[in-house]
Amino acid sequence: MNIAFHIFFALVLGILLINFFHVPLYYFIFLVLGASFPDVDLSNSFIRKALNLIAVLIAVYLLINTFNWINSLLFLGVWFLLTWIIPRHRGIVHSYLSAAVLSALVWILFGVEAGLMFFVGYASHLIADGIFFKIV
Figure (cartoon, rainbow, N blue to C red):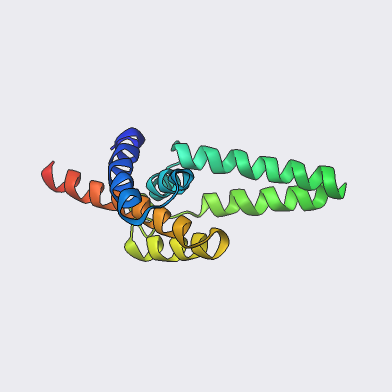
């Protein structure tokens, strides 16, 4: 299933959630990130490419601000090692346990609304996959 469908499905649920809980519209970014995140285990996915770009930008930031190329290379090495050992597609990343753990992390870092929207996006991805793959 493509990312556009996952984001569309998450947005439909998000609109209902925003109307019910009166969550500000800018939290939609967490909804989109949550809907995209389960596909991080695909090397050609939008979220994986975005996270790779963010990792490179962090490495450049470390290099510029610390003038220490070893820290920068070490960070990139750890990041790409982690992406190399990511499990198979629809493995642990496609689970409600991952959704709960990552949503809790988002909640801690950005607040309850962000965590809730991330969870709704993530869960919508899992629900859409479940419905689609049962039909096919």
